Amino acid sequence: MSAGQKLYEGKAKILYTTDDPQVLLAHFKDDATAFNAQKRGSIAGKGEMNCAISTHLFQLLEAEGISTHWINSPSANEMQVRTVKILPLEVVVRNIVAGSLSQQTGIPLGTVLTQPLVEFYYKNDALGDPLLTSDRLFLLKLATPAQVEQLRDAALKINQILSGFFEKCGITLVDFKLEFGVDAQNHLLLADEISPDTCRLWNQTDSDPNQRVMDKDRFRHDLGNVEAAYRQVLERVLAQSIQK
Picture 1: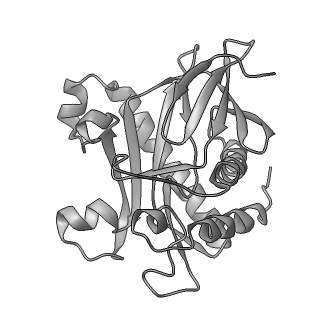
Picture 2 (picture 1 turned 135 degrees about the vertical axis):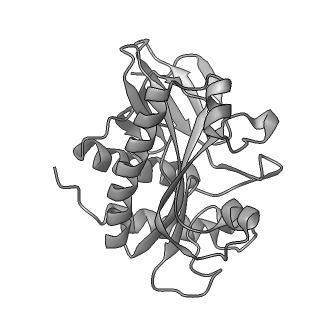
């Protein structure tokens, strides 16, 4: 199934039509952005690494009963996915305090939360992807109350699965962002990607606050060795088999 017309180009991927209207081809790019695209650059091999990591993790989640948009990965940096209408929400799950949660609350970086925190952000670059209250979410009609409950339940289940998986990899899943879409049958599917671009991942064998970072924070905060960190995540993820 070959790529057709370019349908959409985002910060990390390009979506193409195919000869099947229910299937799209996602091309993963090496481009890197941070701070709402105010910082731009590239990470050598990022597209292929993120595609491979996402493929493995989507297969893991599918085996655990989570419905995703993934169909297959025909090449190193391409993924065939089901056509969905993306909900304009970013669902963030936090296990440890980092990033904006620390900056906005004053809770020290690295504080372990007593239970996972699920947050919803408005997926709107022009507005800076703001954090939403439930009332604002419903005011904007971004999702129905039933969908929000379904999103929260799915996010917590995905967190449980991924946290356990990354633990086997010697990696702590600090927090991560999810995106969901609705298919032609109105089924809610996990979409986008799961990679060091969308997750905060800390190496469990390194206590140094900067050296332990294995995700896009290395690019975001100029910590160096970005490609090596992504590749280490890739190698550890692929080393873990999926139990079906």
